[in-house]
Image (cartoon, rainbow, N blue to C red; front, top):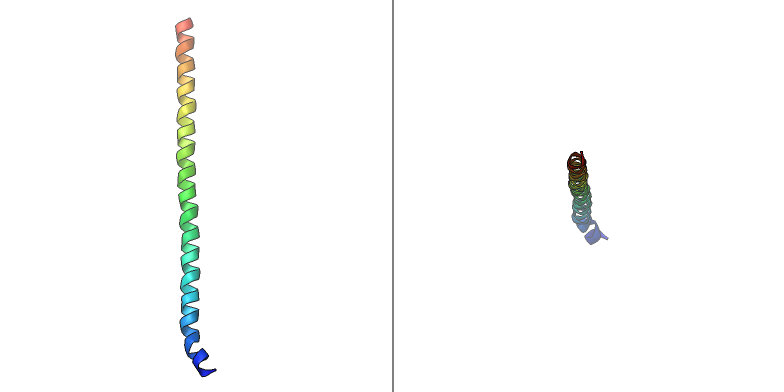
Length: 63
């Protein structure tokens, strides 16, 4: 029983480190997803603006 009590602080410290690592990983994953979503939004917005520009050019040619 005494030997188990000697190892408890080490086990708890490893568990705390694992929990901190897991939380940091989740936070960084969420930030990465936000960055990727903003890049996709930017690409979609540029695509729509290019389509509008092309349509306006076509309308100006037809006048």
